[in-house]
Image 1 (tube, helix red, strand yellow):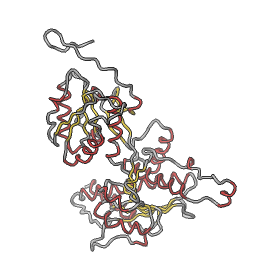
Image 2: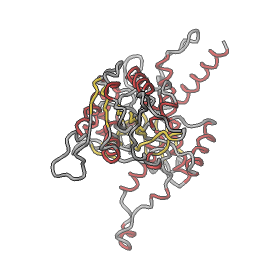
Image 3: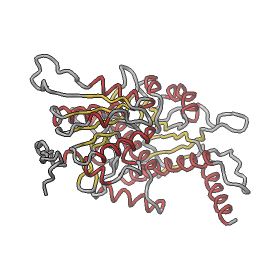
Image 4: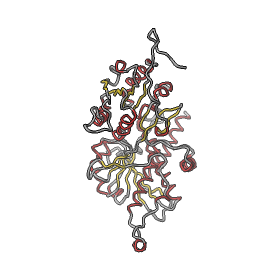
Length: 427
């Protein structure tokens, strides 16, 4: 019964917080330098039965919405400390019981930035009105890439996976041109990124290009979500083997089988390049990561050794008595990036320009994002923008390190066999 009462209190607090959705949350109401709207699934009209547990999906989406709000408020608070003010307006993206929308065009007209909605079905219905408002439209979740082509005002803060294939490809071409490279294809939902990698990989060296070795090798294994295919047959004992798999967590069974095949070939030199999801799969064990020096693309990593980051997180802890979640950090960084771009685009005072025609805004005084340094790539001419910030991380000496800081591989030494055909181990 105590747990039920506690949940009811939390719901009441959320309801009272969002009920004034048309009101503004700001640091200083005297003046505003940026107007922001967040359209998120608060489910303000959801009736929670105090006898049974709340609906799991709606409850979690409420939590995610509040985590985004906390991140936006955190960024606004940091901007206020440097003399800039942000007006934050909250609207519920979920229609009421009569299927009427909880916000109108006049609510977002004149806004500088609109965040959300999170649900793609509702987002599709809202995009045209956000465009008409003249606001920059920032998407906080993964969406159909075709939605980004609706206009240059749209930005997706989650980096597209297709943006990291170049990083892995460059690593393979510069360090493993003469190794036995095996690319494992899972297919299914992972097929688009796998096809992109195959399209970019120079299976045959271009003519008259001395930078590409004629001995470059590349083999493909056709697997599936549940099968590793013929990978075991492709691994060569007398060569350095590079296994590449861009499969996501949807292909858990295949990645588990990949780990088993590598572990069974414990006397063979094998290194692994994998997709970003492998870091979060609990069944991938440390011996596998250590032995294969697994390398993956990462984005949005917090540098906890940076003093500025630590001070920024302390502000969040003072505000909410907890550490920021990934959603809070993502929203925080996105708002700071949007504010920086808005300030950079604002015209300077004419009198100042008369004195110095090269004068510009000093953006160094603004608080910086703590996890993502945004690098924007336009999808097509007059299309939207996607974040393409990725870097490679390698598991080395028991921890994930930036790949650029990890020592390179020593020259490959062909293994020797004794008279009985067994591998000679060197101690």
